[in-house]
Image (tube, rainbow, N blue to C red; front, top):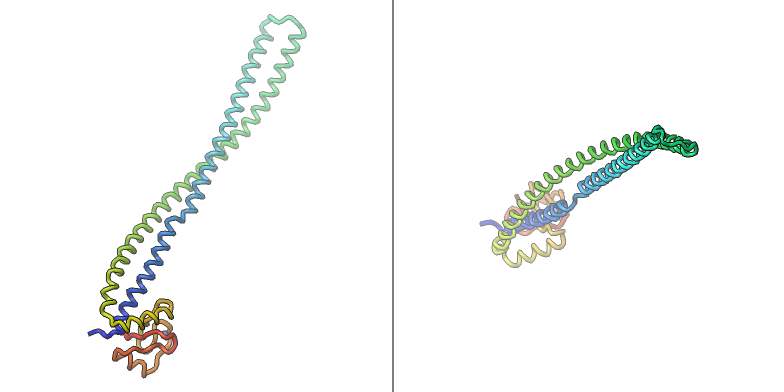
Length: 233
Ligand SMILES: [Zn+2]
C-alpha cells in the first residue's frame, strides 16, 4: 500500500498541474484578445487606401478642370477665327482670354503631372500596406487556431484533474490533509517536494541521513531548508 506521504505527493502533482494549467489557460485566453499588430495593420491599410482615394480624386478634379479650360479655349478660338467678330475691343478681349486660358492650361498640366506622381506613390504604399494587412490576417488566423486548440487541450486536461482530485483526497487521512493544506499555504501552494537521492527537488538542498531514513519508511519529514514535506521518488 502507498504511504500517506506518497498519496500527498500525488495530490501535490494534481494540484500543481491544476495551478499551472489554469495559469496557462488565462494566458491563452488573454492572447486571443491581443491582436494589436493586426489592428495596427488594418488601420494602416485603411489610411493608405483613404490617401490613395483622396489623391485620385484630386487628379480627377484637375483633369476635369483642364477639360473645362480646353473647351472654353476651343469656343473662344472658334469665335476668334470665325470672322464674325469685327469689334476690335472684343477681338482683343478674346485674344487675352485665350492667352490666359493657355497659361491656366499649362499650370494645370504641371499640377496634373504632380498629382499623378502622388497617386503613383500612394498606390504603391496602398499595395504594400494591403499586402502587410493580409499577411497579418493570415498570421493572426493561424495564431488564433493554435491558441484555440491549446485552450481545448487545457480545458480537457483541467477537467480530468478536477475530477481526479476528490478521489485522491478521499485516500488521504484527514490529519494528513490538514498538514498538506497548512504546509501548502506557507509554501506558495507547494506542500510536498520530491526527494531524489538526498536532494530536495523544490529547493535543491541535500537533506540529512536521518531524514532520508524517515522518508524511506514513509514518515513525514520536512526539508530542513525549504520546510516542505519530503517524498522519495
Ligand atoms: Zn527543500
